[in-house]
Image 1 (cartoon, rainbow, N blue to C red):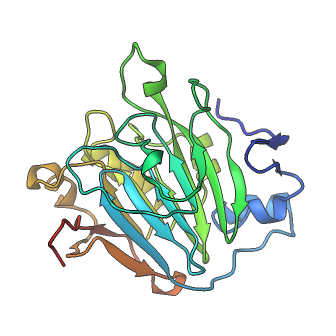
Image 2: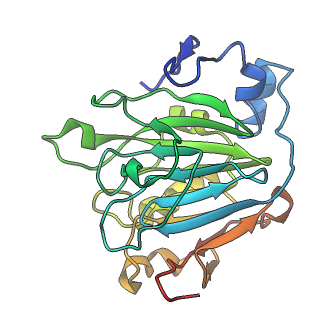
Length: 271
């Protein structure tokens, strides 16, 4: 299960071929021991600037590279959060649900990357370089409606930019298996659900963190009530509660050990 193909993939998006672009696709986010064994031409991505990460609530983030490439993830519909005005270059959809796939919210004409092939329950296979960002996905399982097959499947997305590897884990409901971990590779910043019910809960999220050992963890897919995050913050990782919905990070400014950042959704009238 979850085996990647060496053939050209996603022809309707980018005509990307794994072997042709191996030196670009297999970069810093991949396991360096595996990478060196496959192709000696592969080198880590260049460290060039600060990445901005902004959280709008639920699983909806905007990630902006040092060169200004904007990516939004899992844009929500009406669910109680403020609806932001966003002008992304890329939209990723990890779950086909109205709380995750409101691509019409995005202004302009962004590239839309879906974890499932549109209108089907089949996983998509995405690996491409867009401007200065490497993007690839990892199929996952979710807790959904047994009568609705598409709700049981989704995707995590990896973004490599400015030498930083960012994983939006989607609505993952359990720790990753060995195949998934190999596809994911090294991660610096992890966006992980902690809400339970349809996704991983606090204890499952901690197991995922232990697997990936990121430097920064951004909890998502929960409601902003103490009961939703209290058990997650009991340890073992230090926790910072930010008064803003965004922060900047570079490869050089990553913490030495894993830290958890709780971002704060900015509502109308707030600074």
